[in-house]
Length: 201
Image 1 (cartoon, rainbow, N blue to C red):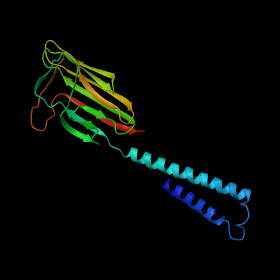
Image 2 (image 1 turned 30 degrees about the vertical axis):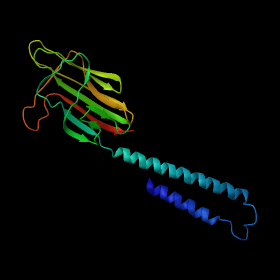
Image 3 (image 1 turned 45 degrees about the horizontal axis):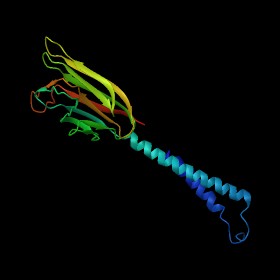
Image 4 (image 1 turned 135 degrees about the horizontal axis):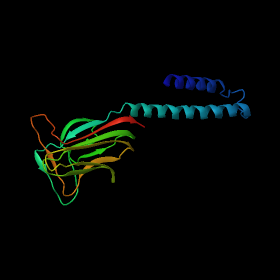
């Protein structure tokens, strides 16, 4: 694409140089057909420059790599609370592009595109684990796990189209728990929040 653009620009420049008004005809008005052609060449050069800029922008977006995986990083029960709370997954395993903030638990889309997210929670024995996945202030998905006789895992996954600057995060419902356990050094526990950019737009 860049080679084609360069060739067209060179051709336009050559034609423009060939049609420069010389001293012999400089005191005359520019012939209408020549002026029209010069205007058309100028429009073509502007369009080519705009197309080249768009191609460079698209290439930069295509090369953007975004992926994160974070664990809750605790041991034992978290909750319950009488209000909803944003869950902060502090134990980061992967954070390509640094779009996930482990201090707030919030993912911010660095580019417009299609993203995939997943959430995995452990309820603990005899406890209810209810949480919500949000896009900006809109509830997108529900994650639930409960078993009176034992402990269960709850999970959900979704594909979202995001604009640059959109945020995605997980909220623990009021009067709900999650249970996490760090079994060894380097582990990220039982409760995770993950996301990846599938393709930019």
